[in-house]
Image (cartoon, rainbow, N blue to C red; front, side):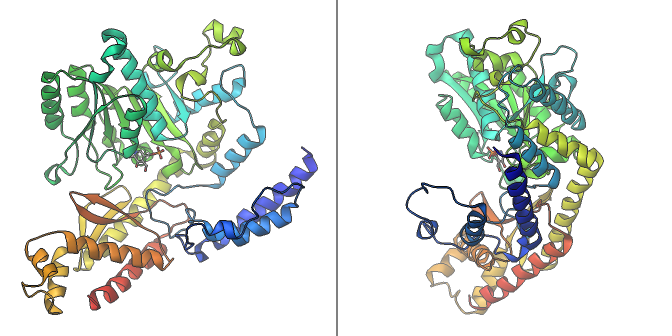
Length: 504
Ligand code: PLP
């Protein structure tokens, strides 16, 4: 590693990225390439001899950028955006440059200690109960940085599983049962599968309860499952569900779970960051009754990918399941039990110095500016929601939560349009479906609308499905998005709706 060459190439990359950020709004937001496009442009095998950075960067510009979906674009509203930032990038760069592999304390004391401190800072900003903090009175709690929410769920799930199996014997693993709702993220089912749990309940939610998991439905499901000889161990409650950002009532769910000794994990992957704002903190009221809580700083917290923040009340539950102690890792510090070895709180051994990134974000912006950043997006979402409401052809499918607006062309618009265009004569197949109240046509038209706006390359939004209804999601959270982008996005949607409905 030649430091001068590093300096030269490093500057080139920074220049490249600075230009990219300047121009990012000019690219089609969703990549427009066809599958397998890249193979045509790259050689069949790796070069035998070195190539200059200049020609590599040329290829990035020419062949990679067209295949990028521009998550950093101000016109990006898909999934949940990933809000990169200067501090997040600089932190990532520092971490990559130092290249430490801080699996235990001795392998890089600062990496471990900074993580513990930063997770306490962030836990305090979220007003998490003291039991979740490392500096909390009994030292049983603490936070850890993982890659993704899926890892957070898997780690806590195996902790809950092993706790129960140590009481009832490993042969009973087939009886273990975990709970979520039909709105819980798919990573939960995956984590359960990896953990060897076969019984996964996705309890049905209803519109009358804003698509949240209610304590009553949890309780009645638990009772009937227990009657059938199953053993409940874990509940994944969500604050800010993926499709529509609904908020499960943490306090009531924890009360039910406590009665049955069920581990409660609160997955606030997207919305957790908003809880640093006093006006949103009530969304996690009751978290003191949960065993663990996580959110993705790489979603809506100006922290570049990947950075999932997990707090647990009892880290011994994690380490009982996940600790390893091979000879080659033995050292005095670990044996003194005075230090944290984060390898024992997670799946992998090696780990990045991610706390550096989060530390930079917290220091460079400060909690107050981070709040402003979040509120700004929420206000833009309110603007967007207001615009949708003004156009009577559309409906807000569920009230906006945080910075997510879920909307669609309304069923009544579609029926009226078909009727005006003489399609709905009662004999026509599709007309019959509409008359029968079937959602098929409504979904098809909204799918077409979404595809048409995404194909334009001017914005990118994705969909959710709730109770069979296809809804378009406008998730505001990209770092560069400003109000004028949101207004432009709405105009674009109206234009595409105009032409779609005219030819319908
Ligand atoms: N949970 C929720 C509520 C999410 O919205 C998401 C992703 O959008 C996830 C979990 C998955 O997160 P990850 O990709 O970090 O596993």
